[in-house]
Image (cartoon, rainbow, N blue to C red; front, side, top):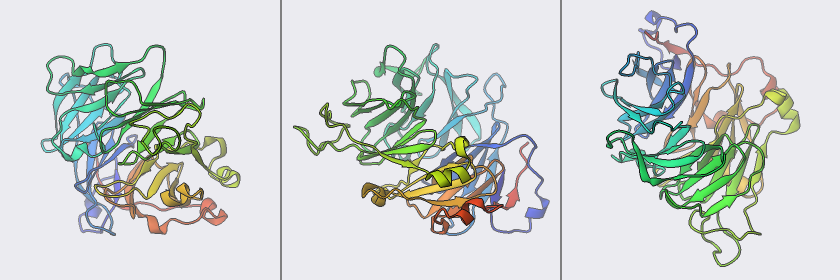
Length: 382
C-alpha cells in the first residue's frame, strides 16, 4: 500500500509492497483516521492535516481467526466510536469479525446464524458509530436483522428481524440519522422503513436494473442509488395526498404518486472515452458529518472519480466534474465533515484529492495518458 504523504528522511528506507496484494476496502472515521484493507492487513492513515497529504500511521498485519485462518474482508465498517472494525470474509459468510483497532487483534467472532449468508451491514443510525452503541444492522439476500455482539451463541436478535418470502435478492442497506432504513435489491426495488422489524412504509417498484448500493442523507430526504453505469437521485418527500410533506420513511406514498428518480449518467461521448460498456460505478456516497447538510455525491469508474453538486441536481442540472488518476480506483469517499477533500484508494496507493481540482469532463481531461498519482510512503505488509 502506498500513500501520498509528506516527504521524510525515512521514505527511502521503506520496502516495496508485497506483489499480488492489492488494496480492497476503504473506511473513513470521524476521528480523522482512514483505514484501508489489503489482504489480511489493515493500513491506518491520518487525514487531520487539512489541505496536506495523508500520513501513514501504522499497519495491522496478519489478521487471523481463532482457527488461524487468514481473514480476507470484502466488507468493513467502523464501530463503537472508531475503536473497532467489523469485518466480513466471503469464505465464512455466516460470521462477522470484530477487530480491536487498539490491540490489532480479533476481539470477537460473531456467528450471526448457522444458515445465514450475510451480504452487508450498516450502523443502526447514520452516526451511531460516534456512540458506544454495540448493535448494528445486518442484511442477507432475504432478511434484514439486528446483530448484538453481547448475545451468546448466534448474534441475531430474533425480535428485530424480518424475513421476506421468495427471492427478494437484497443487495444494500443504509440508515438515516434517526434510524430509518433504506433497503435496495438486485431487482431494482427499494424499501423504506422507519425502524427495524416491521413492514416497509414505502416500497418503490423495481426498475429491473440491479442496485449495487444505496446511501441516504442524514435527514432521510434524499437517496442516491448506484446501478452499474448510472445513479438514481430520489426525493423521499411525499408531495400529494393525506401524507403530503411527510417522509416516505414514516408514511406511505399514494399508489399513483411515487417519486420520480433523477437519473445521473455519463454523456454518451464521455462514456466512450471512459470505457464504454466496461463503465461500472463504485458505491455512490453523499458527503456527511454531524449537523452538516449534504452538498455533494461521489462515485468512480475505472481511473475516474466523479462528483455531482446536490443542490444543482435537485434543480434539474445533472452535469458532473471529474478527476483522472493513474490507476483504476478501488474506492473513494469524502473526508468526514465536508466535501472539500476526497480520500481515493487505488490498487497500491492511497491519497487525498481536493475536490476544487476536479474539472469539467473535456476531451483533454478524459484522454490524458497519465492521471494523478500517489507517491511517498510505501509499507511492506508482513
